[in-house]
Amino acid sequence: MNRSTLRAAVPPLVALVVLLALWEGAVRLLEVPRWLVPPPSAIGAVGAHEASALLGGAITTGRSALVGFGLSAVLGVLVAVLLASSRMVERALYPYTLFLQTVPIVAIAPLLVLWFGPGPRAVAVSSFIVSLFPVIANTLTGLRSVDPSLRDMFRLYGARRLATLWKLELPAAMPHLFTGLRIASGLSVIGAIVGEFVAGFAEGSAGLGILVLGAYRQLRTDLLFAAVLAASVLGLVLFGAVSLTGARLLRRWHPSAQGT
Amino acid sequence: MKVEGLRRTFPGNISVLAGLDLDVAPGSFVALLGPSGCGKSTLLRLVAGLDRAEAGHVTFTPTLERTPGERAPIAYVFQDAHLLPWRSVLDNAALPLELTGVPKAERQAAARAVLEQVGLGDATERYPAELSGGMRMRASLARALVTHPRLLLLDEPFAALDELTRGRLDDQLRALWRKLGMTVLFVTHSISEAAYLAERAVVLSRRPARVVLDRTLELPTERTAALRTEAAFAREARLLNEALEQGEHW
Ligand SMILES: Nc1ncnc2c1ncn2[C@@H]1O[C@H](COP(=O)(O)OP(=O)(O)OP(=O)(O)O)[C@@H](O)[C@H]1O
Ligand SMILES: [Mg+2]
Image (cartoon, rainbow over all chains, first blue to last red; front, side, top):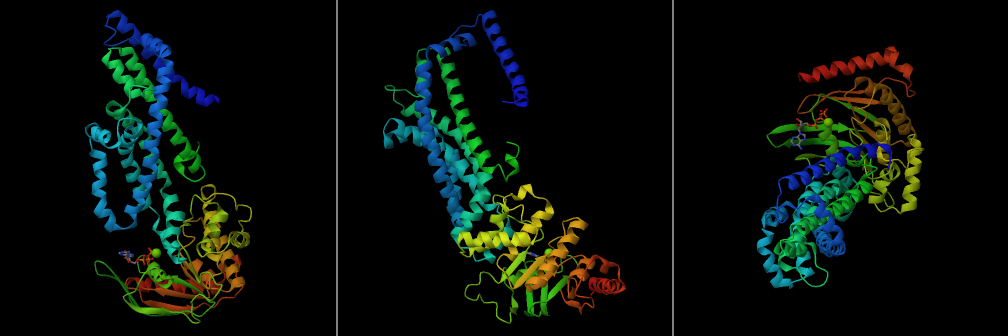
């Protein structure tokens, strides 16, 4: 870590410390009951005490989210390629992909349990459904935004459909594709947790969604906060990994990744 | 190359070419001038087969059918470099050969050779974002030349460059033409560039494009910067200028 990144890290850290101090002070001063809003110190203590359960939960949820995200990435790109292959196909099918964005996942989660049984499979499918649309939409935008002169050049040299897709359209769509993947990575964790609310197991290594539900039922609000925090960190880790991969891949050619 | 009665009308009844005729001898260097929007790019695209005409045709003698072993008989250079930003200069220059199925070692050797010719021998591993505008344009030129095309179409290739770089690239292009002997069709807005580069200049009128002036320039084959100040050069430039103005009110 060099000096400038250190300097960039200082202001948000100071802000965080001030915020936590204010929170702690306010809760104590006003004597807010713990089950309503626990002080940060209590959340930290329960987080340390339940560290292994939280870590286990993050791993369980993370695994489902990764499967859902992976499915979204692969199928999202495939669907986008299919939609981009002809205006007719796009016009016929694109409106239905919008359902993916508007479907209330909480409402169809029970359906997923009926189809896939309770457990990680239904959770992964829930994660997949929630994170699919941004991959499709952004990749499609990328495929459509190819420089027309480059298309002409490929035509001039008699490039086949597949060569044009592989050597022109997909690379050109990469920046957009990664925008989609970044959005999808955050959504996949949300989808997994919602899935766990409905379809998660309580035995074995329970996911974060299950921990949240359990903490809520027992009014252990400090544990609930800790679990929510763990879920946010999980989302951030996934988001960071995808962002980093994108920056690596685009480093030498795309302005969005310059200086990384 | 023979263009006969070429007609192209764009939606909205925009008649761009209304029966254009043009004859270009193999191995000649022709500059194409004309007011903005008169149909120069349209003509080039039709010649390259990137667009279809409603009437008329372009024929090539000898035929431009691919001979066995030949990769692509026509090359096209756009106004901007239009390189693939995710590929190195070498892989950009090799692209036409790659698309026509030349094995990797062979196409890279050919790309290296042509990059050497345009003075990019030291930059083969760099990416387009790491090049200057002039270098990008030279990479684009190298990409066009890598197939040893028999017909090279250039659409205002150096218009976006500074005067000095442009002059240097003009010299390079002309030297390459003399060495390789392909037919060149060069669209430009610059009268002095046209006079400096070409053996023959064709001036088009405003839309729909018709030939206002078709002239074989009376200039020496050997062209250096000194030529720009000579009387013969000034005379040709004046004639081209007059024709351009005439074409505005055709
Ligand atoms: N695909 C298209 N659809 C509709 N109109 C077009 C299309 N391409 C060109 N035109 C029109 O045809 C005319 C000629 O265009 P063209 O690009 O050939 O001109 P040009 O001579 O190359 O001009 P410039 O010197 O500015 O490049 C213009 O009026 C343009 O608006
Ligand atoms: Mg043009």
